[in-house]
Amino acid sequence: MVKTIALEEHVLRGVRAEPDAKIARRQARDANGICSAGPLISAIAAPGPDRVTFAADYPFDATEEASHFIDRLALADEVRDDICFNNAARFLELKGG
Image 1 (cartoon, rainbow, N blue to C red):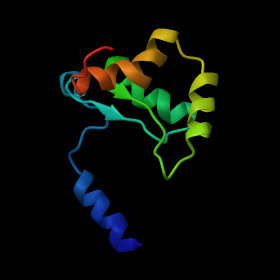
Image 2 (image 1 turned 60 degrees about the vertical axis):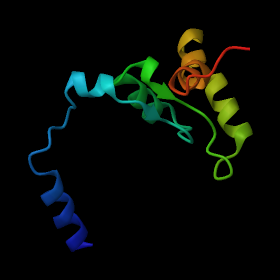
Image 3 (image 1 turned 30 degrees about the vertical axis):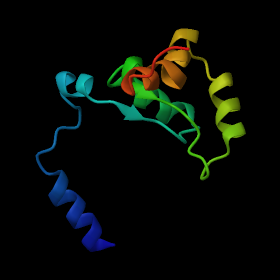
């Protein structure tokens, strides 16, 4: 345990707590399996809702649980649509049906 903490401190030395806005905007985040409001909102906040995807992490997480969670979360409909479908379709260059 002590060795792990020392390693983490060594690795994190000099790393800024907040990512540069330009770097954050170039990232895409996969928030699959995050069925907790705080962590999901944090995952969306840094890069913006157009850079995040959300889905169940099947078979490790229950699809039904993820769907109920995201449906009950207080998000604008357009944000929910983006993180649940539109962003993945854009990232993967899927053609609309």
